[in-house]
Length: 227
Image (cartoon, rainbow, N blue to C red; front, side):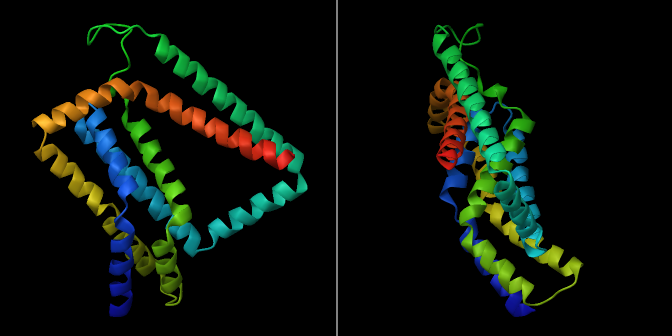
């Protein structure tokens, strides 16, 4: 059991050294008006990591993958046309939002028509972003999959499996928790003020850009699969 504990702490430590997650939280924490809402982003990452870990351990993820593969094989035209349609919709929506943002005339801070302020990032948006980020990162989470493989070899009861996965996920989000407190400690300094002022100018373009990228990816994947 001590060997398993050491493996859990070691793999989670290497997995938590994720510069992209840290950079994204710094960006979001500089943008949001109510800094405590960043907890929803951290919670989204932690819960998604925890849920996917249990799904992989108990084979739910493999079953879902096999089901998707079976649906794609049985109804390839329906699946790929659906993805293509969703991609076109997202691309059009993202382009419309981007054009709407560009058309807004610069105005004084607080006036109607100025770019959307960081206060527009609501808790549910931050939670969703955390979940989405974690799901994307899981495709390259080799330490996590290695830990789950070692854990499966012990054939533990469900409460122990739950405890070890929880411990792994806690260590995984620990740098983000420390970043939250460290950022708040520096709140009000000149560096933080300049960073937040800069991000206020670009924050209105983040959501339209993300929707455009998602639409472009779905259009490419669905279109190339059809061809």
